[in-house]
Length: 161
Image (cartoon, rainbow, N blue to C red; front, side, top):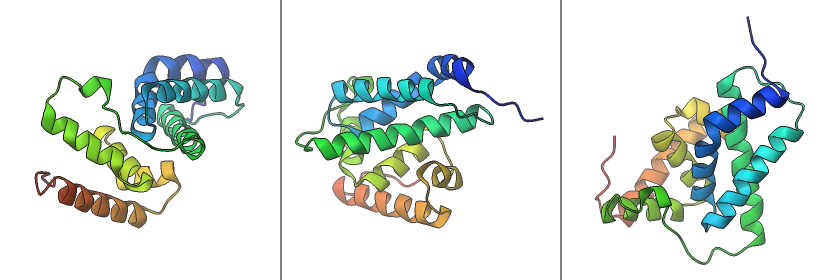
């Protein structure tokens, strides 16, 4: 039996479960914390306004990530990408990890989102394809090219898993 989540139930559940995920995706796709906070707020406003029914919590999470990426893309079109900022959650985790995060944030959008969703959120290529509306083989190419770009940027200091 499929249980559909919608309306206030979807908002309440999503806000409790996925606010951090939405914020992290936004941080990886914007240039500053203020923009990431704005996008996070906009995502949840869109959730409140939608009449969409979600099949399950994973469907809801995928929708939230997709909306976040789209809103970040729109915001980036409006502003120039002048500086990269470190993610607050990683400030105390050491210089090497900060260099990796900077390198990931500097990747082209498709590579950046694919790397983030795979390594930070644990999605498979097939799941990422559904979220980003791309074929699984395309996602695998983005992962491969993103890892190669990171290897070059980090002078071979990035180990492939």
